Length: 331
Image 1 (cartoon, one colour):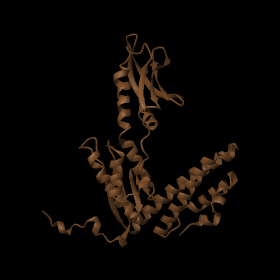
Image 2: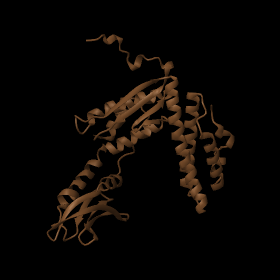
Image 3: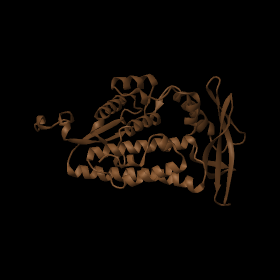
Image 4: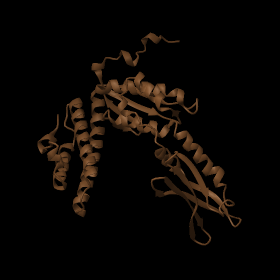
């Protein structure tokens, strides 16, 4: 066996020689309680601001019923047909939320489509229970009760107690986005070295989630690869950051332009969302300009253009203290 003492660990790398980290993670099926997640966050010094709120019944109900989609095969008058399932919320009052399951049968022989409601799932707001109802006449074409209704009610019971993969992935993605990442390849992100503490905390969180994996052979994982500060790495990150930021700024200007062309009033909540995104992009551009000691290609003109459009739509950028001079950014 070779001399293992010659192999350097990530912890022994001189941080002054780093540009940042390439990080990627994998999150399979997982199930854990709110208290478990809180303990993991506290252990790894991860900010509790990323923790999900308590589980509400109506959210759990919509989440599990929202998965009722896809294709099945039904038997209508003894003949097999391809069918597609869909779910729609048809009522939401003080007592109940009712979501109807629609079944669309595609008859290729007669070039026709038949859409019918085969039943409903009902969430009771008073006791947070879920029940289901089947409309008469559909039992014979497919075992909806065993394949859809009963599994969905069981999934709801589970969702009221545990956070699952979808919730955890959403949290992890929020943490990643707060570290101003740039996508290197799909699923792999560059993170500036100034976010070392957050990267370390997140790596610890994902490591501690392993014990809650639904399958012991398919576990959460995160890899962090230090990237040395070389000219080649700088060129790569500058190109990726410039392209990504320009695309996001283009999306903002396009949305604002469409509002102006249509002459429709932009709702305050939408304007605040765009304004928040704009500020985040400005901060991200500043960070990468300082890190790489360059002005990122095309971004300055795009920031100025976005500011002009904001001013035309509403004066929120000016009220927030933005001026075109600030769009020059660092570098």
